[in-house]
Length: 337
Image (cartoon, helix red, strand yellow):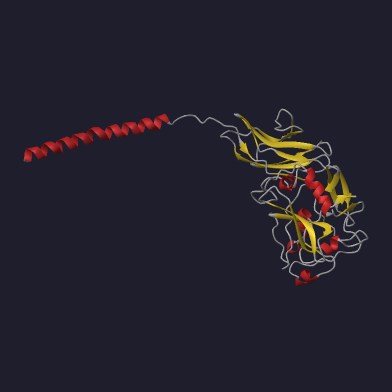
């Protein structure tokens, strides 16, 4: 019995002696097999925003998310009037030192639809950001305050490309500013405006929010030669862009620089540059900046309600709605007479 036990012990020990060196050898081989040189890939980058559109220029922002394991040798933006522009055509060169950069494109033609992509080049080739579409301005218009707005032609209409910032009517009379914490807003029956947190820097981007009484005032909130669109004029715009189910996407600024994610359908192919200025609800606290856009029409539904338009981050539609004339604050876009 003892002999048999010793035999099995010897076999086990022998097995272990054999297998352990074998495992170590495989490990060394695996390490040797992974000593490959790094093969560069083309860079990966985004096209984050299109802004500051003028008659002949635009700014385009980008972030290089991966250099492809190789030194970036060139970056910038390329553009053209046909889809999928490349670096063989018009382009900027914006350096190689920064992961984020802004390209300033100049020399464009007014009232023209362009396609633009950012790019980055390394030894493996050139990578491109997502394509964006924009339309250069057609002209400008100035309000009584001295604010100048770029305009764009969409079908048979000419629209402002920015939300109204006016603090005075066309005759020079002041439009009352009602701060966002002031509860008198919901009881007003005369014109008023506001901006979120009483911060005028916000209105520089998104414009002011107005009650409907300021829109309907006979002193006129719009610049000379312009007016707040009627409900039927909004319908003309929607129909030209393919109907209310898809027109909203063509009106929204593309990307998520001003609009929150996901900004579904937003491509700005109309050139309208719709921004999400939010709204002022009954409570007086501004909300929904980055999420929704609301614009008044000049048409009322009844004694207390007026028609408006609404865009949001979740769809490509534009919604026809109505709201209380004095209790809410919406943005204003103007259309040429």
